Amino acid sequence: MAEKNTASNEEAILGAGCFWCVEAVFLALKGVLNVESGYMGGRLENPAYEQVCTGTTGHAEVAKINFNPALISFKELLEVFWQTHDPTTLNQQGADKGTQYRSVIFYLNEAQKELAETYKMKLDGSGAFTNPIITEITKASTYYPAENYHQNYYALNQNQGYCQYVIRPKVEKLKKVFADKLNPNY
Image (cartoon, rainbow, N blue to C red; front, side, top):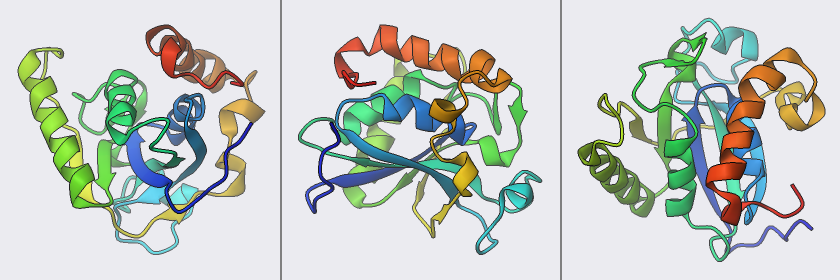
């Protein structure tokens, strides 16, 4: 059952490769009310997917996540973020290459910035990854929603090849590692 979007809900904007993957992962979490695929961080106003795909706009594919902090915290979203993509590869996630696929946290306030930077520093210092974490932590700029056919992509196209071979393994990993955080209706 979807919860009401109220003033006490918060947003997070994360980029971790293809926005279809990010959207599918975060929609599965208890306390996440909505996830919208979009673009942020570039120079071009009102970009289209075809333009962002060139890697020349500066925009990253992102997921705008609306969540209820009483059910899932920003810190918990970051925990899922760090573990469901490779934050050590520059401008690439798997076979998806280009600046539009960079690992990025677009913070919306100083609390998000501080938490993201602290978490990144501790995670990097822990040796959890062989290579240094290169995730960009940047103040949010203008957000542009992606075209309608990108929204809820995995749920609507589960039999498509990319969904089967790239997104499904991420969702399966999520189910194993974060079983306690899953939306029971997912």
